[in-house]
Length: 557
View (cartoon, rainbow, N blue to C red):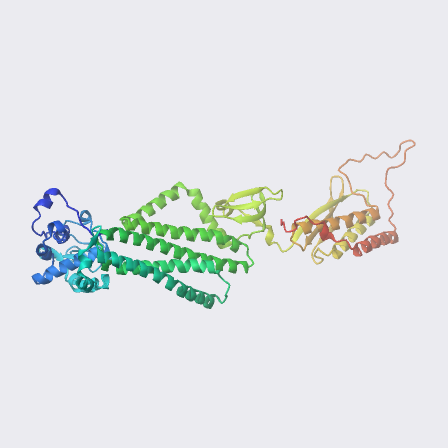
């Protein structure tokens, strides 16, 4: 377990603290405790602490023990004695995951992330700091303390002896210089890094105006602040602020995590801006709808990672956090099965793309225009402007009739004319409708049907099956209007009457009453003239049928 530390004041028990006068090397906990305990101000015995190092001269062992303690203090690492194993035969299963106990190296690494080369191992019957630790101690020390300030203390001894609030004056001066240097680093690096990021952006994206300067400045500011934090972490140990390191390094690690989160968020924002520009160039409006959903998912993932990192900074074991997150995720999935189904449905919709934003679809009993596809549901606006929120899981389970993908709009109807209509007029009426369909600018003249289709209960049935070219619902209604008006005019010219659902009772002989049978003109020349007049009128018509479309022609069915 990693924690920030400089001062080490843990005692396993008061009695042990009073009786611990000699180094105990029987197990990993005892060895590490002995090393640190005998270098504390109240129990300072470097000779005893040096016993935790094996195979070195007494002088060298003392130097190494003190040096290792300074490294721990300089990095602000706190050793939690309770978490160190006290088993004399301990084997670290993480360091030796696949080795059997008799072949595995008996060792323990207190800080596997920060100091992986510093560990204790069992030699004979006792535990000592390893030879690898001794071999790398100088390199680690130089890395933790890149600037040696001993010459300052030697040249200006008053700076060391004079104290303000129990802090040596040279440390206060050094801290002030460090703060000023950090501010200078920030203001010097920011314009340089801004220029570099802008240059990279233009080279990669080939567009000078792809991102605005505000977003780039936000990214650069976060990166520079992160670099400043790294600069402070690198130089702070040289000030030897033992009592303050635990708080300073804690704050620096929290700040480092926060700046990383901001950097990732800014990068995600740039990616989403590029995705938005790309999706606008595609035909599918569903790609544009994916942008806010994808942004929420990516941002949520970044926040989650930042939260986990903060938990580990405050001493929570990462494995415990991940295990808890996994168990919690499973429990949450069981508790919110519908939400999980809807989320999976959302992914399926964006991958399969059964419809696009603006398409007129039919899902079960719901018919309308797709307005939005969210994480949980799809919003459909019906023709009466009411809004339906359909769970995405249901969308993926039922049939979706996407009328927006039709190549043409089919229109099918039956015209009922009176049963006493002569065959000549029936044929002429059908032929006249065919000519109207051929001349109609919005119908497919190569694909239609106008036929005498059958006998109804109270009328002779004329089938009219046509296909309109325009997919817009408003234009379709206007096209129907023009077709219907031409048919009505044709029927009126030919004296063909549309039948009503009725029953006709014929009385052949009734005093002083005329026969109700209609007299039809079946002369072929007269019929042809009447049809020609109607067709010519339709052909020369300059009616702008689009003007009669709905106020919002973009509303699609």
